[in-house]
Amino acid sequence: MFNLAKRVSCVFAVAIFSVSGANAASGNSADLLKYIPADTPYVIASTEPLPSKLAAKLEPTVDEILQSYQSILRYVMTEQLAKLSSEEGGEDKAAQLQGVGEEFLSLMSLEGIRGAGIERDAAFALYGNGLLPVLRFELSKSELFNAAVERIEEKAGESLLIGEAKGASYKYADADKMKLIIATLHDQAVITVVPSSFDETQVAAALGVKAPRKNLKKSKVLRSIGKEYGFSDYLVGFVDNQRIAGIFAGNATDGDKELFAAIGEQPPELTDVCSAEVMEMASVAPRIVFGYSDITTQQLSSTMIVELREDIAAGLATIPAAVPGLGIDHGGFMSFGFGLNPMALREFYEARLDAMEADPLECEKFADLQAGVAKGRAALNKPLPPVVYSFRGFVANIADIQGMDMTSGTPPESIDASILVAVENAESLVMLAAMMDPQIAALNLVSDGKPVKLDLTQLAEIADVAFAALSANALSVSLGAGAESNSADMLVADSADPAPFMSMSMDSARYYAMVGEAMSKEQPADAEEDGEPMPDEIRSAMRDIMALSGNMYERLSVDIRFTQRGIELGGLMKLSD
Image (cartoon, rainbow, N blue to C red):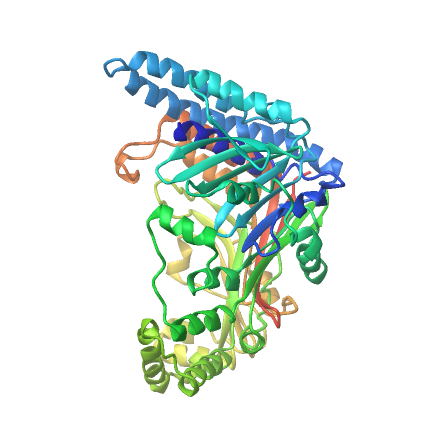
């Protein structure tokens, strides 16, 4: 019984989130938020529709991707049914399960999702009733969703149990001490898991039969996050680290306690001192927020911020260093790098050690962490070469790469790339290297930014030509086409402002094509975790998924920044025409 309910809930959950990139919410869908408790520890919600042109652009590809996943699941299902049929009395069970499986698979398409009452403008939210997850989404017609569940029940030859909470009917299945619930309320579907010990009032609260007096719509927390960080209502959410920490530090609700009892895993008993220190640690990063900001038919921009305590954020913000070309999309196959000021990193670390010495942790569970202070001091007292504190970062830009086989691990036959190492007083570093290597000395590199040809046998295997150039604070080496000009241009390239700590950009279409090509080739048996090669059907479907993903996203850029707000991870996906 529980397996049936689990399959029903999982299929609808996967279906909704699979198309969330192509579907969003109706104009008045903020009402969905009134069923979410204001003290929820986590939520991800979509209450604003995607631009219709963007949805129309993405949906065909999303549908094809879902069909490819159907092929994978159908193959796996066929294999398992064949094994079941070979067992004594298994033929009838296999035939029954095949009908259930096909019904599930029919939902993994836009037509199937629409047929279950989930339209393009359906709002959805995944949130916590305490720690318990609740998935809630809008329905165009509740009867369509109920009919989809009933079809699965009919094919399974068994029905879910019926329950009632405060006048609302729901379906459920028991499994050990937990209960999986599926309900349709207020023209919305609700899927959740609760302890079997929950009484009628608790189940009604979990389902949102009645909107809680303190809810997210009234509190306007999501609206406030969106306004502060520039997120749209298409997708916005948060994880309240302090609320979650509190559950394990003595502030658990009755529902949380019953959940722990049901799963047989009680949190460790904490003294008042330990509880206070747990909450103090949680205050360092009290919340994680995320959402989409810029959404057009050309691109999708998203950000995740780990909010940090003011002093921690201010200290981290001093660490990134500007590096030529870092944080700039160079337009080639792939670029990546990082920038940091080692002295600023050391000072930040020292400040943390100072704080832990001034106010040491007293909880016995953190004894090892507190003991690490002495080890940290010892590490800092070890002398380091001055060049370590002169280092500022590096950038690698791979414009083109040919002949690389990801399946066999074959290195590239040729590569057009540039690498820049940023270091204070770079000429002194090169002079030091020249004293140890005659080949480097023969280059006569000086910090004038002019390219010098490299005749190194180590590079000849992957590039016909190579050049190096030196400035006061950086050394660049370029290989392949345009190497001479690229080596000089790297030294004077712009750096993103504010300077990122780490940055990456890539040609998504080409990357997915390379991965898809690798998947299309038969791999040796010892390359697989279970010692068996990937079946042709699955390999073909995975190749199609990679190709379709490449057709959808043209370029991807990701930046990690340390700001006064905290650690910010920003992503930009440029869509294909």
